[in-house]
Image 1 (cartoon, rainbow, N blue to C red):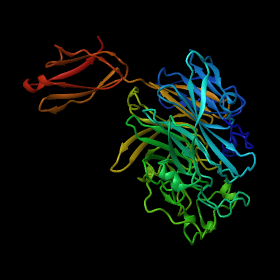
Image 2: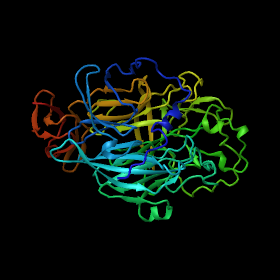
Image 3: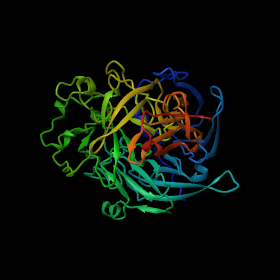
Amino acid sequence: MKSVVSRVTPALWIGLILSGLPTARGADARPQPRDPRIQIRRLTTVNDVAPPCRIAKDPRDQRLYYMTLGGSIYRLTVQPGEDQSLRTRIADSSHHAQTNTMGFDIGPDGTFYVVANQTQSTNSALTAAYVLRGEERPGTEGRLWSVVAHTEPYARSKTAFDHVFNAVEVSPDGATLYLNSGSRTDHGEIQSADGAFPGLREEPLNAAIFRVPARGNDILLPRDLNALKADGRIYCEGIRNTFDLRFSPSGELFGAENGPDRGMSDELNWLREGEHYGFPWRMGGADNPQQFPDYDPALDKLLDSRFTAVKGGYFNNDPTFPPAPDRMLEPIGNLGPDADKFRDPIDGLIKDASDLGMKLFTFTTHRSPLGLVFDEDRALAAPYRGCAFAMGFMGGDETGDRYPGPFQDASRDLLRLRLHKTADNYDAEVYKLVTGFVDPIDSEIIGNVLYVICYGGERAIWEITLPAADAVELTAPIWTPLGLAFTLNVGTQGLYALQVSSNLLDWTTLWTPTFPSGSSYFLDGSAATNAGARFYRTWKP
């Protein structure tokens, strides 16, 4: 594998985002839960020259691993007590030859997948992405590294908006890798890279979710949109920067997306094959005004002079802005009560969408939503069972608009998202769950425990223990001609009994199976021939 040393520090884009924001000094402030049942402890801090960017679990044994922006991968051994967990470096750039890594996931067979970027040493206006596979070697601690796919060199903008390839998500069956490549622009403006690419906005290798076979070898992703589509490499388009991808328990792909340097909402999207998600014509459920011939940025109440794109004059009257596609999908709607502040484009005032009976698409602007996970094992107690969780990376002002971040929203928190299916999308009830992290950048979930890794402050790794579900949840029975049908959601596998009674005093055991974790189905056929009241319960013998 050819190694090219990057001329750009791995943390450039994150460092630029964080510039000008208040940061913690000294020891990390301890995150605060809003539910007293939640327990929080710090497992360790990341001791590496490069900051952390990802945390993931091996699905086989639930062991945790984290990766830094400099290419190091560590195994985290969780131990009792505060700051007592152990970290062991198991791979770095000397193994896989990459020093600018942003994406990391682990397949169902324990294979590591890493996404890296290389700014080309011969022309700093070009970059290339590499998707790596690290396979276990029996009897050794090391892994065999190879290239799954790589891109042709393509155009950077040489601005803060070079989001590049930065996320990888393995499909549930382990067969396919889904890759995010963010935009090279803030909102679709011309970025010529100091004249290297006159008139260029986005590249074929930008602003989309790509896919490649996990067992592929040295697949070339060309700088050619028609060729990419013909080979089935593009999964969906219109993505500004979906730094976090995650499959739900039902196998649907979701992505958390940060928005532009304008007061437009950050997004959560249900990502579907062949669809377009709006960038750069629609972001956060609103039109990008630069596409319209009468746009005057001096009258735009959503522009904030503290942001890079506004300072750079990238919002301008733009008569050559390309026409929008015919079909674009909207983000998931936020029903509130939290993370749903917006600035009104008419009067410029900050408002709360749910207080006004409105739906935001999806989060308060500039939160930079990251760390998306689901209660995939239904291991959590009410009201958390079956929910999704996401974090806000950017720090904001809880009561006003003093910082170039979210307004009237401190962010840097863990959100609980209760998703509701609509006719063609989802809506979400959004609740702040834990506040006070320092730049939380990624998370993982194992059972009823969330693990949060922080980019800033002391780069802490936090363990968030949520209330666990009862061992078995018995849903209300549904009458069928053959009897009463139940679904039993099992939080912890083991032997349980399902019993029936007609008087709540005398109980008859119907079933004593050893349940796996997850959902099981039972049909009580005797109910079809027995009149009168019937009561059911589960218990552990």
